[in-house]
Length: 207
Length: 201
Picture 1 (cartoon, each protein chain N blue to C red):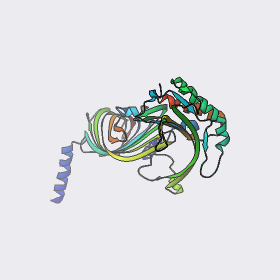
Picture 2: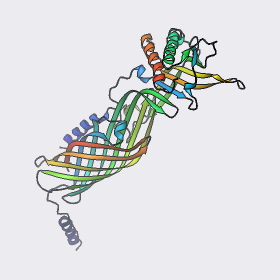
Picture 3: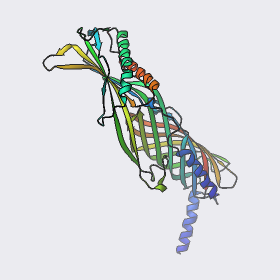
Picture 4: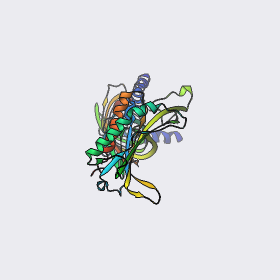
């Protein structure tokens, strides 16, 4: 009888122990797209805009420039997406030297995040959790190393320049960050989604 | 004389408790638990958890009343599709992964409505603490937090005797209220459905 009970117990434990449901997370599902704006700005008071000629690539500190070819590949795409969205919001695109009210720049930077986390596999807090292998010795430390690529888009006020400080006021700041992928087709759809999302989650950018 | 007193005490105890002969004082119970998120908690995760269990030890102080302790576990998880979350001065867009694990450690009083018959309904009240592991990821960034908080759980159920084997089949509905009040979650409430067995020692 007692053995039956223990057997039942093990059965229940087996049901409870798997930590996360098998859930395949793709690279692009990790993408984050953020938009921040100057709440004192009146986006309706500007009419014209200009965009930089090409996307600026900011290399990481280690000097690697794997993204270089990718950047030139996506530069035109990013710029034309920005233009389309701005025009759809009622702004007029003008050349850079025609005194635009707004200036838009885009840059890509890449960097690595390296870190570690440690978890304790012992009793009592984790017995129901997975990743549980105390007979190999614990606590366990797992190291991770991701390469993160970010697209950064700024909108600056060229109409009301601060001549004294020679500073431009940033009205709208956006980032799209995610794990760097080697697939060109996947990257282009991620870029499309990133730029379009920046606009859809910022309904205040309009004339 | 001493012996007489001891015997008298034992007899007295039996009379007081009115305990049926042959019934054991100690009962171990084990059940598989399903948990349905309720209240505000369902805004965070609204998927039923099919990963849960509970182990309970009861001591019968009379035929109908037992006191005991229980330890349990439940794991909740929900992935939320890509969405923009607005805040003052901006918005952020991403896929959200919400996790919540609960480990209740309870003291429990249980009352059987009948002391004979094959099927016995019962009511119980648990009070204690829940160890909560709370994890949320938005894209590749996330946070996790672990804490103990006060909790209570009223329960209704029924026990079915399986012959004279000392085994009982158990069905229980428990309403768990975890006074968490952290990280934008108020009380974590869920309705637990338990199926399990009791064993008399």
